[in-house]
Image (cartoon, rainbow, N blue to C red; front, side, top):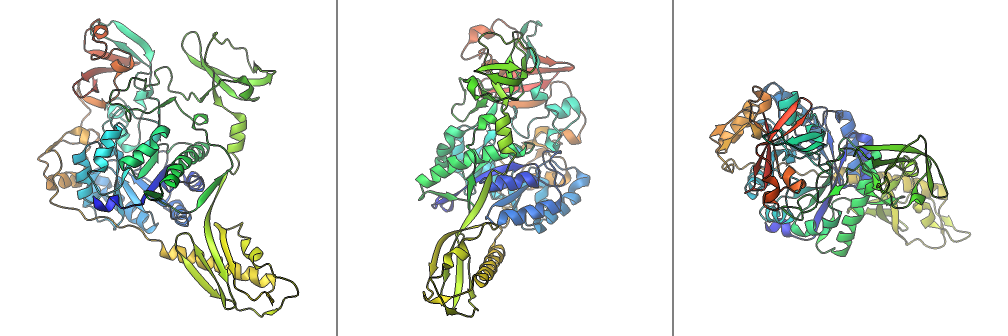
Length: 597
């Protein structure tokens, strides 16, 4: 553990990208790394990218020492193993920095020496699991979203590899990798990137006597994660990588949220330079003030990071749609904005603003707003217009020195070049502004930080020649930086490491022979086949395991309000259309299970 504790520790802001355009904007706005789907086997089927695009992206990112991680984090069927093997080799040749993995069968393929990261789909929420993943060769571990700060700290202190946590975006109601509702009910596997969003539906909750407890509420739909207030504490706990959720989100969302967390992380780093440092190079100049509530959100929650049994609501039970920003001043509204509210029937609805006159909102169509209703702006025309334009540039600082024999440049990453000054010198008729020739770096990724001239003040060099020297110098520096970029290699696997448990069931997602082989070699004695590779589930099959509890959300917790739940007879069920699910409450561990009926 001593290696990880050396200071300053690199801190990584990790951004999502559905395509290369979004990825480049994430880097421009300050991301230290980007995770992106490959052509297949990423956990978002609609966010796939070609190898050629990913190669272009790595070339762009590596200029700033930023990294590209590719998601190959679905479970893999037997007949797909060799395809995945070829895919990883292609990604390696495309200079990808790491592969994010769920299926342990990949560790038995003939892979190149590329770094492996353990996806949150691996259900990483215990010290034992984290230590095992480190032992078998993973270089970074993505923790489950449900953990408290103390649990995160304990895991960070137990391993030497970087720990990655989610800090913002959509939340899955089940432990990641342990949600089989979509597969069981719709034949669409979340573990294969094809989630049917069962958790976002409206449900009616009834007891065993068919007594209705609540009707048509989105009981499994959580608010969006926002750990703005906990970044410094997470860094202190040992977290090294801060991950934003959202590989299906648009460019505006990524630009806004990345810029927001870049500011927060930089403030902590700048306050503690002896403890932390940026994981990449270059600084971003952003032309807007980041505001996370202007991007898609269902309201925000800190989830469980503060408390194992949070007192505040963590679910968005009234709507799964974006709430946007709460309006407190009508003067903030622009013509064309989208405004939403809950009507008298509790339905989330809205209207488009036609115009604003002296503080009065004139809707584009007739609308009845209940007295005292909270208004939310879900579309801000002025903001959207601003975000549709270029909003950031990222520059690397360089120092340049010129003397009678040559010119040298050094960037902030430690790269250095020197070129001879092959020019015919003449006596200057007036002082030569040599610095001005080297400041003109606008079309490059560089920004002149320091300039030193040791030329004889009487020396005259034609400006056209200085311009040529500057161009050649920048080209040489860029080439040197590219040559010196280094990938971290895959860590070796300890073949003697024992998996924390000796029995796996269908929820552990073993779908191929190589995954089965891996677990057996590491001491697992009984292994069930993944639901995706077996028959459809039988009644009473657990399809979700959640720290979110419907009873706690509805103020019916058996611990806090035992007199309320006594009015109803268990088991409780939730229904939505043709879906009927049973709830089981494990109060000892403060967990809820959702089962087929």
